[in-house]
Image (cartoon, rainbow, N blue to C red; front, side, top):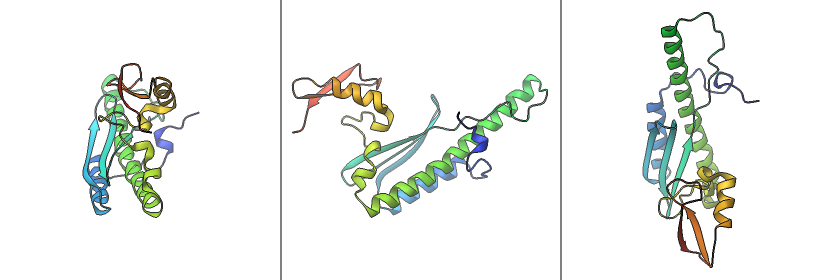
Length: 172
């Protein structure tokens, strides 16, 4: 059973998503990353953190945790309900920013101690600005491997589902 956002760390943060994005950018630049950028996507809602470290481009996608809109509910009118939902959604977005910042801190600490390529592998952008392994998920990755033909590796196209493929020479 999934926990509601209210039950997780950083729910009571007063730090905005914009401040978290600034802290992530500053942290990555201090640690030697280039081409650092963050972006809040609307549909579906997600925070994207992109950067280049060494020769590799990386992209990490964070999704907000879902709040429990019914918690502590009394009888609300329609306007009250919309205001309450908007307030909870804003808190979940701010919470996502704090979680993202702390995740990036941990990833960088572990990557600097060991092999950063292994630590950041799930977030490596595939050739042609394709999806990352994190975005593909296990099923998409397995579909990509099964689509390999005659020494060509099938990389998912724009939909990311592995069905519309771009073929590139597989490295030996």
